[in-house]
Length: 111
Image (tube, rainbow, N blue to C red; front, top):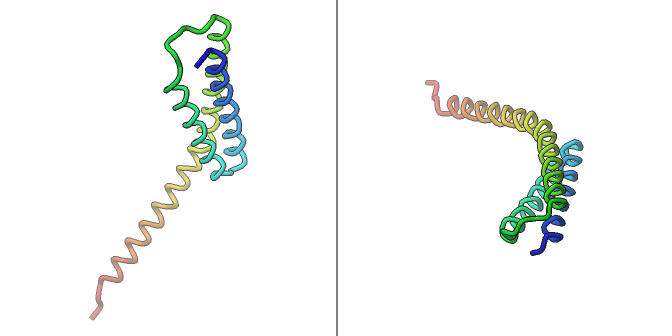
């Protein structure tokens, strides 16, 4: 894989994280999950194919710029999804407590 292809993958990762951010902002969780899978595929492709050769200074700077943008998008995505995940966890915990309480009362026989 040459330098241009490597930068193209980084750019595709950035495009994908931007789409992920939009999906999170729109609470489109199914789309967010699909985009996360695409991002993982791209990062795996990069890991498996990035050569050990050094990028030119210009391309190294571009790569760093893209990485910073991806990290910024990731932070914004987390700021949206983490509260949602906590809320979901609370709902699931409440449901589980209700189910356990119901099962406890069902096993008690009043004579």
